[in-house]
Length: 121
Image (cartoon, rainbow, N blue to C red; front, side, top):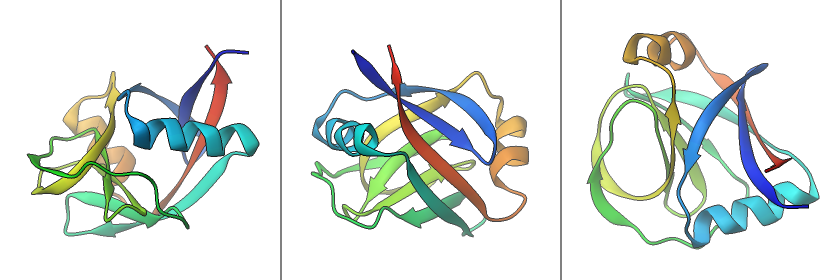
């Protein structure tokens, strides 16, 4: 089976354009064993952040995020943005097909839980 990463926010699946890097490969390997459920907490009025429970390979670079960006912070935190921030992150992917207002509705209304899973590609 060829597999790709999928993402649910709460109960709803969202489309993601995942990066092809060592970090997402490690996430996929873990998701093939079992779905990864991560409780996220609102932070700073522009992001949701939560611990992956383990460190992933990282290639941090100074970037300015945009709404929809999914990044790895400090090697073990996943961050989903509905606003913008500049910091050293490793890019994981980007939520597609959602406007900034839709992302704010999805991520800016309180803490959420995400599920990262493997799906046939």
